[in-house]
Every structure is written in C-alpha cells, then in structure tokens.
Image (cartoon, rainbow, N blue to C red; front, side):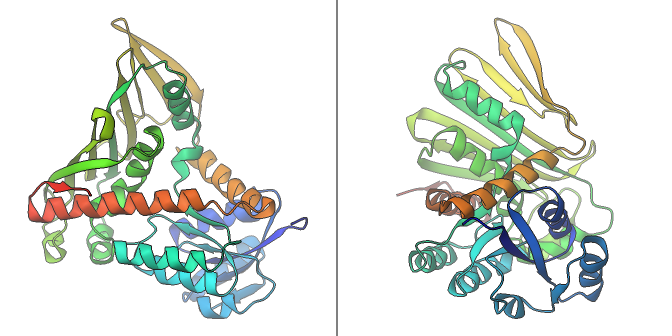
Length: 341
C-alpha cells in the first residue's frame, strides 16, 4: 500500500480522544478521515479540534464508508468482540483497545472471523510493548543480563476515584483483572516469550468501594501464576492508590534483577540491582507515562497495514492473555486454584 491508510475511529471518549489526536497529528502514513460516536458533543469535538468532516452516529454507518481502510476501536470492552468481527466482515483492517474480549468464546469467534480475512491486519492495544522502559527491560532479559528468569511481579494501581466511575463501569468491565491486569498479563507473556501458564490462584477485597459487590467485583486483588520453566509471577491490581497511578514491573533472574515504575515514579526508570547495589539508568523522561508508547503503537499498526503484516501472532497472544485473565477471575470468584490444560 503506497498511499496513506485512511482510518475511521469508533469511540471518542477519554481514550478515544487520545488515540484520535495521535492519529491526526503524530503518525506517518495514516490519515484520520472519519469518526463515529453516539454522543453529539464528541462528534462536535472531533470536527472542531481535529477537522474531521465525516462524522457518524453509529459504527454501522462508518463501516459502510468505502473510503475507510482501517477501523480504530476505542469503545467499551463489552463491545470489542462484536465490533472486531463486524469490521473484519466489512473488509477493514482493525485496531482495538485492550482486552480482545471478555470470554474465551468471544475470542474464538474473533479468531474464526480473522481466518476468513487472511489479509486483514489486526492489532490489540497493548502499548507497553512500545514503551522505552519496558523495551529496555526486555532487551536486558533477552541478552542474558539477568541470567535465568524465575520471578516476575507486575502492579497496576489506579488513583482513588472520587466520582464513582469505577463502580458504574464495573458491570461491563470483565472484572478487575481483565480490566486492570490485562496489560500486565501481556507483558508477562512478552517477557517470558509466550511461556505457558500451569496454574493460577487469586484473592481480593473491597476496601473502599462496597458498591462493587453488586457485580461481584473487588477494588484490590492479587493473582499468582505459575508458568512453565519454574517462573513464578504475581499480578497486583488496585483501584485505591493514595499516591496516584502506578504501573510497575519487577524481574528477578539468577544473575540480577530489575524494576521500573515502582512507587509511581513519573519517569521511565529502569533500575538494575546486582552485587548489593542499585544501578539506575534514565531511559526517557515522559510528560505523560505512556504518551510515547501510544504514538509508537499507532505507528506500528499503520506500518503493518502498509507492509501487509497481518500481526496474527499478536492476535493469538491477545487470546492467551484473555485466557489467563479469565482464569484469574474464576480463581478469585470461586476461591480455588485453576489449572491449565
């Protein structure tokens, strides 16, 4: 594909606006030509802020636009599977925010739809793979600096919510792990080169939001996953961080360990611990923690479409991440150890 990839975005809420700005202003080879939202104020924002002229009330109207090459989905999680399938059936390439789906059955439906469109590029939005700090951690792990990896810990902590959004959103989120930990699960699969999970256990509480009981969700939870090759991983998710948002990773190997983002540091630091000393290397100073990663992710999708890369292996990994997230939810709700076939 030699010309610009013409994109239509579906969903212009908080995350959708972020994606739309990047697509309109910060990627090469792509052109944001259309948007869809049932909210009039969001459509007006897209026209006023970004100059988008093709604005639709529904996704169905946008999919009927034959000028659009690719659809960018920034919509509620519960819509993802249906919308990916619809976009593929309309002959579009697809980017969709995480997670791929809320159930394994929905994942399978997406995979079957993808098989019928073998030339379509499909990407699920796991932007941490494009963050310089996470990329540096992966580089150090792959070049043997840590030795053999045996321990991994991820944390995704959200700042305390003062307006009740979490409680309102919870019934359609898929639960705390699928909503908050799915990025961490993807990171774990990336760091371990797709290691297979053996078992998972989980526990959680409602510390500050009792209203979550109505949908059997929690505001703090930790899952423990045993991967093959004796890699032990823990995942902590929280809606109650007093120090603000925190996205962190810790890796421990036989030779050294590293950490990034611990304590909610606003910069992308990678710290390597070895010989009872701490070695800190500033990778990049972010204005917003994942600003650069979102842009790089968008560029990667555009490049993949133009180069004919379908990214099928990444779609399989997105299914694997959902499988682990669903198992975490089952382990939490049923208070049992879930094993994998």
